[in-house]
Image (cartoon, rainbow, N blue to C red):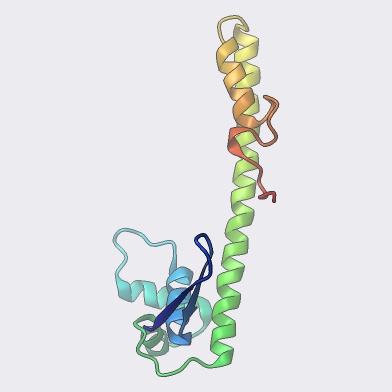
Length: 146
């Protein structure tokens, strides 16, 4: 794999990667999530199925042994990886919303039981879910703000 790095400033770094190295990286991303007992062969098979490649082609890309990557193959890899990333982001936003709702239920139940005794816990839960005066609270905003 050939990688070149160009430093523009202290905080910004641009990495140039060969098409084969990028394809290998995308295949590894597409094969996720990895179980602890997954073999590399199982990961290659999973990635190949998800992108519609044959096992041998996926294996040569995975190990960076391919001599070239067709534009159609790269487009497919990028599209599948982007779709998976978008799906994971949507799931994360949904999970965050469910968590905020669960915290609100716990907060309400504690306030009903004994507001004096659970006052500190209720206040902490309000801060956690964002009702403590900070937008997003400790859980943050589901969408990054600039």
